[in-house]
Length: 174
Image (cartoon, rainbow, N blue to C red):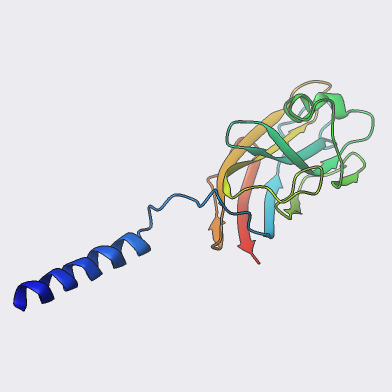
């Protein structure tokens, strides 16, 4: 009887630990709907056109394949957002927030619904938020950050990167 009770307690503890481990991988068999909000503050690197600049923020999968553009502020100078332009096969802005060249630096916010450019919900998994801006007729500043798209809320505040600071990435599943 004691052995059975000890075995039962042991099995319950092992099962509880397995279910609550913080190291559990993201459940890629699911497609959780939700909203990811990205916020960053840009600052000048004193390029030729400073403080005017063009900016793009987009999502890629963990292998670097383009998923969706979230925000682009660029009129005629999109091609100088070289990382974004090359990732998107020449500047895909389907369903993105778009606008003119920015005339000053500051806080930028955009969001993602967990869908690709066709409007399909993507699998849960690890994704990258990529951001780029330039104040020149050429490649400027680029940063990327991984985040899990999953069934649980996740908030990250990565360290500042070259001319990107106060970065927050928050995924809230529905």
